[in-house]
Image (tube, rainbow, N blue to C red; front, side):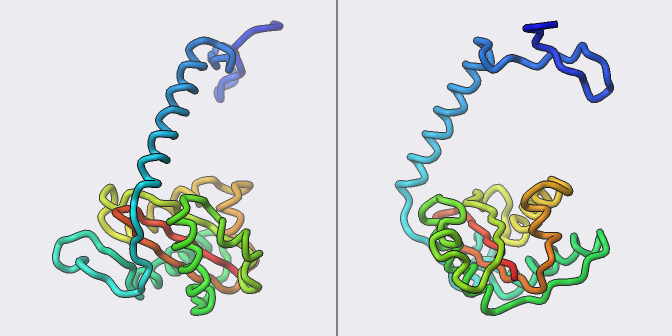
Length: 194
């Protein structure tokens, strides 16, 4: 029917209501979401600088980590390779050059709250062909750098074939490097591929 606000449900029936974008209820939800997003951006812009070094501080004494360790960076590669292996793809090797580039990207993107700004402004720096980012997640919600990596990569992989992050993880690359930046309780993880 013309003007009907129903769509076919996943089960095939046509009685599954989908609100129209122009409906008053949907409009209120969009306004509320926009206001909350603006408040989060304003609050996060007032924060200071953090750390992107490769040594951990506080992870072993019960405090939240302030930086990633070499073990965290290796975990990022291992977790990526675990997903690749699940669909019969070869493992990526860990690249120190890509790690250095990814660390610079994590810092720049994390400070600016602008995903892929480093990658785009340097055109991959002549080294990276593709990039994924886990942007400024609240570290307190996850506890460890590795838990953020695990959850972020799981979300990317869950996109499935056709999802842009999935396609990068499953892409025809041979190397990966991960970079981490922790800033006032937020963590940004960047993966660069070639």
